[in-house]
Image 1 (cartoon, rainbow, N blue to C red):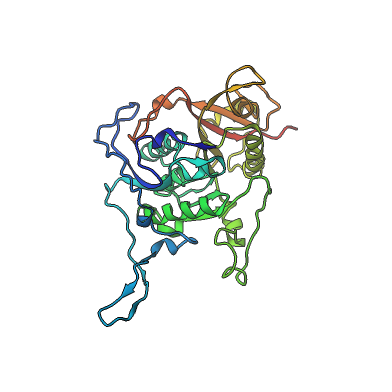
Image 2: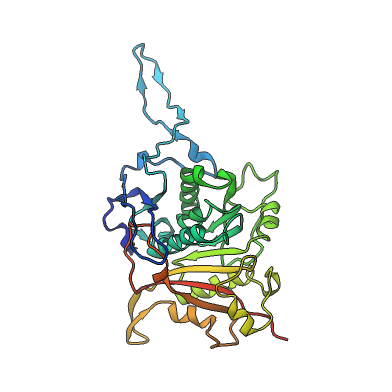
Length: 356
């Protein structure tokens, strides 16, 4: 069975590249002042540069073959040119697929990621909270949210699982590298399987030439310890996946690791919105409603379980995390190429304080 994101309904077929334009918006409004650029789709997969590893997206293989005027074979040569479509300066270029099987939904763009990107843009336009931070995105998929943050962050880890998803994410990093605060070196694409625990598998210098380019190094593990901002978008759509997600988050969002540690629940609730220096997870989600035979009703898969992991407004005080749903109405719509609705939510999450 294949699934299709609503973001893609106006696109072509197969593998496409979409240009998401960042327009101007007044603080506290939902209407952008700038004109939005329609999504440009390129269905011809031959126009999409390959991304085998972190940097090979810089090359595209010219597979044209034949003979020259002397009858000699023309050998296919590797070109250093990258076919990146022209686009507005303030934009994000994302290579993605259309309908995919469920294990490959990370190849699509989802509305929760676009809402989270809008939040990041708004935060960076109005505060310095995300300036020069180290960040990690869980289940990054195409990398849209993390790529948006990389325009201001010192270092962003984009994490997901599976070679297809990671290759495509790496391709998107290369396509947007010139807009990053630290260039391409400011973003690292790494494999992180929530079921395998932490720390993840690592590589060393001797293995680097033959192992996956997405394995973690010892330097990565050292650098990620400085992470204060965590992102996730559209990772809530089943109970099992939600449980695995929070197990992974619990390894990173630790009460004792907050630069400004909450001392009590009342104090911790003041941390939402979190002050600079404290760890926080920002999560965008799209509630997907389906009929449940167990409930004999239409339910949003995984959502109740997601909320069950959180202490919200003082309820469920045994939960390992504090959560607050943010008012997305106060976040302007900088990216025009998607529709918002009541099924989209934005959350801020931090670790609950340790109990004495």
